Amino acid sequence: MRGFRVLALTTSMLVAGLVAAPPAWADGASGGGDLHVAQSLGDRELTVVIRRVDPVPGPLRVEVVSHAGTAPGVLALRAASIGASNADRPPGSASQTTVTLGTTPGVYAGTMRVDQAGAWELAVDDGERVARIPFLVPARFVTPWERAAYGGFAAAGLLLAVSLLVAVRSRRGWPALIPAAGVIAAVAVGLTGALLSASAPPPQPAGRLLDPSPDTIGDPYPERALSTTDYSRPPVNLVLRNDSSTLALTVTDSATGRPADDLLVHDNALIHLMIVGPTGRLWHLHPIRTGPGGYEVRFAPSETGEYAVAAELSRRGGGVQLIRSSFTAAAAQPADPPRRDAGQITATPLVAAGPSTITARLGGPADLQPWLGMVGHLIIVGPLPDGGSAATAPIWSHAHAMVPVTPGATGGQPDETVAAYGPDVSFTYTFPLPGRYRIWVQAERDYAIITVPTTVDVSGAR
Amino acid sequence: MTILRKPLILLAALAIIVWVLWPTSPAPLRATAGRYMVEFTLPDPRIGTNILTLDITENGRPATPSGVTIEPVMSQMGHATMPKAVTADAPGRYRISDLDLPMAGQWEITVTVDGDRVVFPLLVNG
Image (cartoon, rainbow over all chains, first blue to last red; front, top):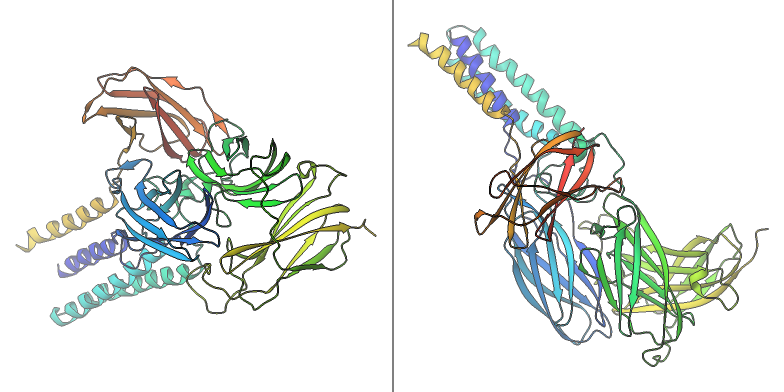
């Protein structure tokens, strides 16, 4: 009789311990980190850092990094829940604040509040235009192996108490063996879960492969039930419209023609827009998102002629794309005097189809700051046709000099306040074709973007 | 007493097991399209023909918009379909019993109510 009672209690506790582990324990993980998004908002080049929200509900800290030449002023920030909701995940309440940019470049922060996991949008309003940055507040979840580990050890503890109780109360010895066997089973489950959790694949960051939805955001592996493993989406088409002050971009799905509203932040921007003017001047801008598939950037042409354009972006599901285009414009404003950034570019012998190393020596102390998450950027356009435009150059490349790893560092990528790199920045690049190339090295120092241009000749393969 | 206790404990254990393992269907998705609130119910989306129910309300009351269309797009394949007009069974209630979703993966169902669009993400298992 007593044996049956103990068995029933044991079974119910095991089941309760293993299966009914609550879905939001305090030590559950929530993927995702800080989001750094470069935005060319009007004449201001800003980096908007959306710090990871943990816990939810909790404070949402947004830092706006201004750069040399950024006009002081007030930005209105507003965070609002977007997309579908359901009864389990109702839409979050909107929250707003203002950030006053001072005259010195640096970090200006504001704090808002986020009360629900899911898809959110941060609107950055400078009074004339609004940048709408989508971001995701990940939900907390417990992976299956964590659940097995916690549930197994909890059940083992309970069963140990039960077996002690039974051993003391029972007149016969054998009933205590039943919960004791349960202890062994529960410890085995807990150990297996704990050992597996170390080597199990970590969940993909929410929203990276699949559209965020209230149904899937709390699921660490929403893709597990799919028979497909290729999550990539079709490439995009880019349509440019320019007037004397603004360049508007429309991003559409190349297969369906519908607006592509699933761009991910890649290398710290939704779109990296590189423009090479008729005389070889480079602009590296980050258009603001104005709506689904709609982007714009302030661009007043100072030269008449053809402007070559390349946009780098990444859609949900994987894959970075380089889309090239061009537009012609008449000079709308006088050209500002050419900026001469100090710096010298040297290179190992440049032979087509073989790797060569290009080094920019920027001088001064080792105080370069990471811009767009990288110590340096190398942009290569060529081979240039005689007197031709960069728009027809067959090669357009963008290489990076990564931030060196700091042993023991935690907390994600260093932001722009870390001025500790350089002053030499090296890139290794294989020129696919011989000919004359324009190259630019970009880096950041004292919150100013340094651009060092030069022209190189690449000889034919030996 | 002890005769009664055994089935009671077994029943309690059974009840716990059933309660824990009882299948739950996710709550319907909700989103606004213009002045309308659209509730989107498609439990357990599967490859093949699915049944979708839309409940459209305005200020909490069943709405009678003049035009409602649905437009399924398989975003990973770049496969769009012609928007399909749907008609109400009852005020504010639309039941689409022949929603064909031919493959597993990420679908986006655009619902247009009187010209205002709203997109529902849908993960089709299979």
